[in-house]
Amino acid sequence: MRRLTLLAATLAALGANLAHADITVGVSLSATGPAASLGIPEKNTFALLPTTIAGQKVHYIVLDDATDPTAATKNVKKLTSENKVDVIVGSTTTPNSLAMADVAAETETPMISMAGSAIVVEPMDAKRYWVFKTPQNDAHMATAIVEHMTTHGVKTVAFIGFADAYGEGWWKEFAKIAEARKLKIVASERYQRNDTSVTGQTLKILAAKPDAVLVGAAGTPAVLPQKTLKEKGYKGLVYQTHGVANQDFLRVGGKDVEGAYLPVGPVVVANQLPNDNPVKKAALEYVKKYEAAHGAGSVSAFGAHAWDASILLQHAVPVALKKGQPGTKEFRKALRDALEGTTNVVASHGIYNMTPQDHMGFDQRARVMVQIQNGTWKLEK
Figure 1 (cartoon, rainbow, N blue to C red):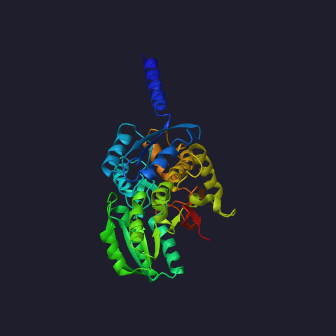
Figure 2 (tube, rainbow, N blue to C red; figure 1 turned 30 degrees about the horizontal axis):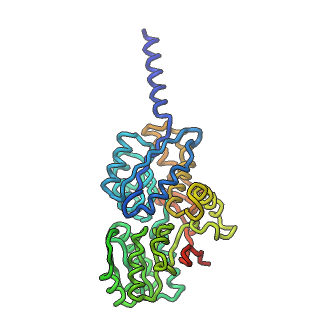
Figure 3 (spheres, rainbow, N blue to C red; figure 1 turned 60 degrees about the vertical axis):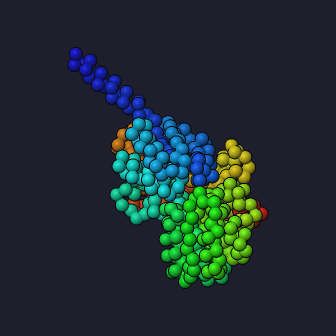
């Protein structure tokens, strides 16, 4: 009887291990709604990711949050409570990522956001202990914009951005850096992602007569302020954020966004990078794979954020497997620790070096300035 009991216990244990043999990656992204032009290439990229890491099968569960923080929260609760995921990837936008981070921390599940704002991972606290991100921070990119402005003779600047965490994050970081570099901010306006007019805000900006305007928005809704400025006769420089670096923005904006400057990850202009750029090889690898599946010129910065999340996992999973099995609390904690220990990992957007205080991990090698010329991105040299 005792032998049968031991055998049953052993089989039960084996069964439990087999039940958690796969690594489960839970994804919530914005494939519909105002951020769809960002979320669709992310979703497309998950179909290109490896199905095994370190000999372990990887199972991806991809859900759409429709650019809605409430839906993102519902998704991540389902992924952690029902699907028992080992890691969360998402969401596309800053408000959704902030909503998801609460659940990630509560369930002690590592999370890799694909949103741009620094506030997703800063300041470090008990909640952000579990959160990492693949895109460049707004502060990181704002520095490049301010440097470009000052070298192009800009003395006064106006800001118009989303009336949400993305816009406020950009305003906070840009204003701080601009003040330090003696740029005078003469106007600051906001609008909603689904607004159809910004005429009132634009008239206030024109009255302030800025040398340049920064649009702190993302995706196709970022076209509206630049289009309205042009319609009202504005002749100064216009800057956009890295949140617009996709073909949908160029298609919707057309001639209205010609001439705009913005900072982007190297992957956006991979073919234009000099051969000694340390990111070029990794960036071209993603471009080749994505465009083979979706056509020439289809690649965007946003799909590459999902690709880079996978690269982080491909380095972290082998380390975590030495300390725990997928499906366990020990594995999730080991995976978090391994992500935080990421060192000199080359990805399509830059080179990651994470620390306990830096869960983004990029330096200046993760950004280049481009200008929109003839409906495409032209690397600034």
